[in-house]
Image (tube, rainbow, N blue to C red; front, side):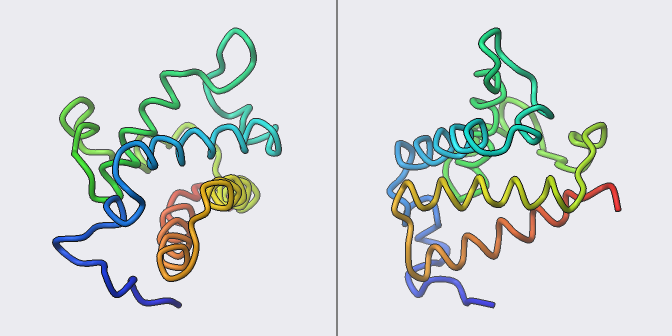
Length: 138
């Protein structure tokens, strides 16, 4: 288990260490792009666009969530209220396979965006905690 990056604290969030809004938006895009390329079953759990990809509204909502979750502006909460992740995903079967597919997609996105070192280790641990929390099927 890794400790938070030395620079992380009340004045410096993961959002800040990643570079702010645009890099986090790019991370969210890379996440869904990786999911669509490599994780068809996981992609299939999402609302889809006419072209078969994950719908832009789904992508945009997750992007807002990710920005706030990483310590950036809380626009998601302002627009949608508390995330209540388990409640909002209750109808979606999340087992270990789907958790792991989600994590692989995020790892690919982190790779693509060049996130490394202590920040990478910290984020991977936090993403694992959240993804595991979301499991609702044995």
